[in-house]
Amino acid sequence: MLKRVFVSPDPGRSRLRFAARAVLGIGLAVVVCGLAGTSLVGAVIGGLAALLALFTVTDATVRGQAVTTVLLPVVGLPVLTAAAALHDLPVARDLTFLAVVGAGVYARRWGPRGHSLGVFAFMTFFIAQFLHATTDRLPEMFAAVLLSVAAAAAVRFGLWCYERRLPPPAVPAPPAGTGLARITTRQAVQATVGAGFALIVGQLVSDERWYWAVGATWWVFVNTTSRGETLVRGFRRVLGTVVGIGLGFLVAVPLAGSAVPTAVLVAACVFGIFYTAAVSYTWMMLCVTLLAELLYGLLDFLSPGLLALRLVETGVGALGAVLAVLLVLPVTTHAVTDAWIQRALRCVHACTAEAAARLAGTEGADPAPRVAELEQLLGRVRMSVAPLVHPLNPMYGRKRRARRVLALLDDCAQEIRGLVAVAADPEASHDARLAAACWRVETAVEALTGGRAVPAHADGPRATEPALAHLHGLERALAELAAPLRAPSGSPLVGA
Image (cartoon, rainbow, N blue to C red; front, side, top):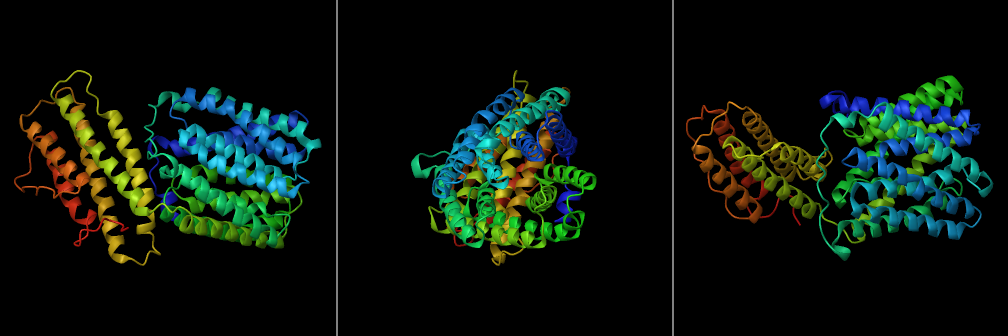
């Protein structure tokens, strides 16, 4: 866990800039709320609104990010109003909360913008429970949300918009489907059922902090697709919460809400959330848990009993998510993994074809966007295979095969990157053997994605011409992929 955070590569220092900008944007939002005369509660909701605006908006273009940011209050303020109006009507409040959960997950079918707006809507309702929002506080909360989102936008799109200098990232389209065949629809049903379980059991545990259980269920479903991914994420959430609560006893409880050291540690937690999110969900949850404890300290609610209650409610929420993905419209790990691997392999062929066309002098041929897409697809493959390579997975045979598949796909990506680098050289010349090698790559990809036998790669002297050498390396990796992708019995990588 330590290695994933402190040794994981950070190309272009993107994670570092992402985290540093978050601290700056959220700090500005809190200062603006303070200058506007809001109370401590207003400053807290403003800081959390700025955190969500900087964390959840992930559109591919800066323009798209700006549009989504503008839409956040449009979605969030009506939800906040409903939560405050229903504060003293438990049944209506609970049913509305579950409706927000289902709609928030279903909105992911519309891509990053739907995901961002769904998360903001859910968290607005959640924060209203966290702060015990009532209708008399709505004007202050509205002002805090609007001021904070504006402050975060000013930092993100004005003061430090480093994305303007970067090419738009490739965002793989979600798996297709209609009705219950669409994964987002199935997940919306699962999340609503799981949240319902968490809500009922959470209220039996505590009639004041029950929303922690619902929040745990919700966040287990974020950025997951299959039941395997959800189970792993639930485990990591509980682990991060346990470690964070342990730190809370050592740090947050002794501070007892002391303003200056608490503010410094809150900034450190915000940095940690943003810096670790892309590489370790466990570390991110540790930072989230410690941040929540520090905020409770500021609000004078923190106690050892409250920390123990948070752990129990988190366990209830994780259990709700696990039961939902296992019993309600389950999405198998195999189905998701197979789909992402096939898309990655087809992208390998597309990268090869574009690079070969570039070497042949075809005008407009550019493999760079395809390479960016391949990196995104491989990230999705790693996420979907994570349950198989998890240390607690007892199926050692499948674990070995999954690791072999990941290693060979990484080899493919390495050869593709090398081929593209050669193609970018204006002095590179076209070799007639490239066409034949590209045809063999296409044949291998079609065989792998179509379930047919992959032609064996003929070993021979390694080519000295760089582009051809990378193509031969790609051929070898594709030929070796056939074995781990299919067990001797003919079964797929992860089983039914």
